[in-house]
Image 1: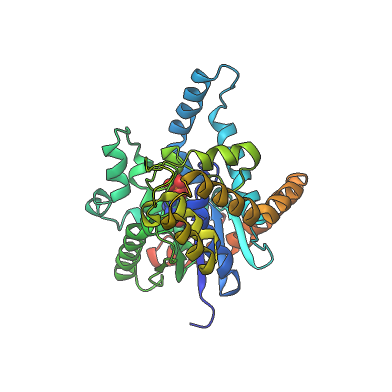
Image 2 (image 1 turned 60 degrees about the vertical axis):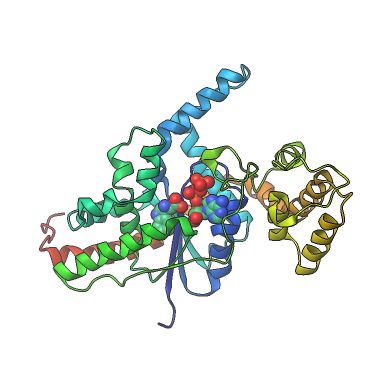
Length: 347
Ligand code: ADP
Ligand code: TRP
């Protein structure tokens, strides 16, 4: 394969955080020279959890009388804009990458429907992410159940080869391969079987030590700054070891996060300070805060400049949609031919 097609998507479901960056965004940007890249903002997917986002807003407003809860449409529109700004500020180059909003290419929903007819119920019933949501007591909508079919359509519509994602998406990629195989088997080869590519960052811990996630309220946002960033870093949970005692770096979430930003030598030095005693978690947090602040400073400046030019974001997404749509239509034409769904001449 000379130039692979590389595709990935991220849901606009809240402010992006260090887990999203080290687990996904960083490698998306690193790969933009390695193939024909399609990156998109998965807004249709985000609809499956928009009601919960609205409930979270109401909960914040109930605690903080000064907070005006945003209606669903405003939450989604702002989240989409934030993801676009974040990617561009972090180094995505729209000349190299086709960067677009999922719903700007509505052909994906047609392919999702077609693929749903070669997808067994059992396959979807085994999805971990769906089962986890049920276990959390969420009342599922049909969209949540068929989420993996829409994701398969995202990937197959562009006949992608490589899909860089975090480990938590592994099963979704396996399902996509199953669905592509079922279609090819029934109607003849159309789709390459896509490969997931994982990066070497293990799960990034949140401030409470669980996986950092928008839905756990334990995130450190990529673009937090000043007091808000300080508050997030200082809230990282540590144990009760007294200040004078030696600390075990391998059991500390602050250290785990520090490792993401520091050179191997700095990591060694920090580990030695932990083990020597008399250091304290407060100093470790300050060192981490300085690292995060310095690492994202250039991206923060770029983001502020981009924010002043909303027309540019719209232009980038419109151009991305135009290019993505041309590829999508070619694939759908082929799919329709295979199915005997030829368009009536007048349409
Ligand atoms: P969240 O759990 O915050 O809602 P998403 O499910 O939208 O995050 O994930 C977007 C991308 O970021 C996915 O590729 C996912 O694997 C990656 N990702 C999210 N959280 C982490 C984490 N804590 N560590 C590593 N990767 C993560
Ligand atoms: N499900 C992915 C996530 O939550 C987002 C996503 C939607 C995606 N469609 C995709 C990722 C296609 C890769 C390819 O992170």
